[in-house]
Length: 396
Ligand SMILES: *[C@@H]1O[C@H](CO)[C@@H](O)[C@H](O)[C@H]1NC(C)=O
Ligand SMILES: *[C@@H]1O[C@H](CO)[C@@H](O)[C@H](O)[C@H]1NC(C)=O
Ligand SMILES: *[C@@H]1O[C@H](CO)[C@@H](O)[C@H](O)[C@H]1NC(C)=O
Ligand SMILES: *[C@@H]1O[C@H](CO)[C@@H](O)[C@H](O)[C@H]1NC(C)=O
Ligand SMILES: *[C@@H]1O[C@H](CO)[C@@H](O)[C@H](O)[C@H]1NC(C)=O
Image 1: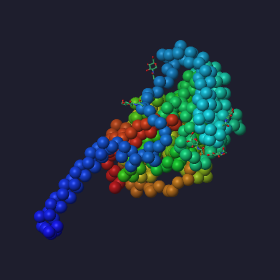
Image 2 (image 1 turned 180 degrees about the horizontal axis):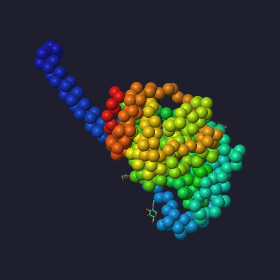
Image 3 (image 1 turned 120 degrees about the vertical axis):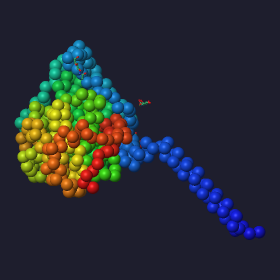
Image 4 (image 1 turned 90 degrees about the vertical axis):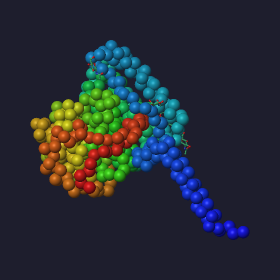
């Protein structure tokens, strides 16, 4: 009676190997089944913003002045009703979520008041730029860290899915895609959204916020993400204006309009952490605005800048090369606050890239970018894209 014979040993081994083979087959089966989900949890806006309901991305059907004149009149007349509906939604969400709403009722009412004021504008005409008194500009953002759920609950009734907005009372002149390149700044996201939406809703523009997140594993490429944002946003609506916006910058003045003037506009002129001074003339980083035509004219941003720095100066060179110049609001209007974060690792090749940049405009930009989109989802305050870059990083 020897249990440990050679034959038994071999059988046991075979059995173990067999079990292992079966088990790994099972694992890979599961993995295939759930590939999308595991990719998400590994890579995403902090585990795909758990609590939000999501819907498929829809295209924006904003009013078309020339083709739908009559519709606009009708929808204009219906604006007051729309507002009531909006108020009801706020009301019902209040009764359902009393604990959240108690806390936020006040700020909600603040936003509603603003929107109500907009209704006094004549309904059948194009939106006018908001008018401000000289003293009216400065605003102070609320930088309290708050959970994204609460921020979404607060703002959802005022927005269309995907963080899009359109004035109800007038025909917007500007259709603006706000493109936010993103990674790792989850805490900033809620603060950003909570402040930027009320700020933008007052500006009589139609807009949507596109959050373009880069998957893990490679150095951050802000410029490539902005190119992706540009291309993807145009699949939803033919936006005429693009604002590229760092998630850690909050505007400090209402008069800073998020529209595209005739020349590209550098918006984040004076930032608190830089003592509200413009560091150098050609700077184009932080927040910047360009029309669709201008962005296409310069072939977008270069895709060659992995790591911090350089990509904005490269764009500055592209603009100069195309005989465009950088316009700016005065320093007292184009003011921003920067949220605190650790310093980024600079790209060691950024100067070298810059020198070579001009010769590459035609072959390095929106016409050459390669990427995969793993996920597109509409949350109530933004549309999220998870993008994997397929560009060779020459710096590593
Ligand atoms: C989203 O789109 C997919 C494929 O087109 C469809 O099967 C699914 O039902 C849609 N989901 C919603 C919520 O509309
Ligand atoms: C608006 O209407 C004009 C004229 O009918 C049309 O050419 C244009 O494509 C429309 N734009 C959009 C965004 O629907
Ligand atoms: C707050 O409201 C939510 C949703 O209605 C509920 O699930 C939660 O338990 C409430 N929390 C407290 C502390 O009352
Ligand atoms: C919120 O404000 C409205 C009117 O401003 C008020 O009627 C309502 O009771 C408030 N709700 C809460 C939960 O405080
Ligand atoms: C900022 O938000 C917090 C909650 O997140 C709130 O308690 C506080 O009162 C707000 N501050 C201002 C100045 O509105």
